[in-house]
Length: 302
Image (cartoon, rainbow, N blue to C red; front, top):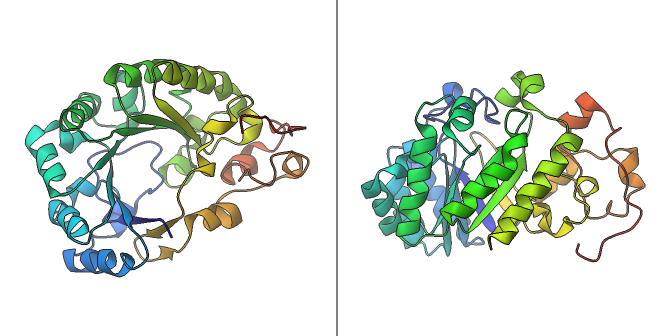
């Protein structure tokens, strides 16, 4: 295994319309410091990279101590997957870096406050997220931004890419929404058609590449990525063990292939069938397979 995804708790100061964790914040208390430290120590035996997730990991009362524990256990990469709001406080950002955080992965879901703040249901979140990116860049930490691709923001992906270039982030990613949790509740409002998203995704990628930034997509199958196959993230995602609330996903790659995603008849006819994971299963279960056009051959850029 290459990476540990440690969910420290599900409290969050956002309430995203597309949150895959749904109502876990009301069901599960944050894990204790001792339990989380044990998870870090036990998994260090065969893993040297950790990402702290949630919920919002910075809301855990012992967040900085957890980061220090990972550093003391010699985890090579310590990534913080966050909505970024706490990092608007420069002192907090510096404390996280001094504790050992060496990769910063905030979420920005649109090019402006109107779109982002509505999606995350938190006025001021966009301004705080941008300030967090600026603070972490000032501290010399690589910034890897994730934007969840949903119906209210997909037409604005090129503008979002322009913002990422202007901010000088290290990498950004467009991740197609996974319709679980709150996203399932608001499915018709939140989940767009992949075919409609395709040209906006590609324009966003082009803008990022011209700006010298590494760009990826997630949960967008190869049939929608013609000419952009090498930007499909699944071929690069490290094999990850996820420690969730009450269960462990031993291998997230196997989970995606065997449970999370789905293949249909068009997939079996596609030249990319052996390497493409297909869409999250909730998508074709609702929309069907008509959009999915099998590719007759593989591109040289794949």
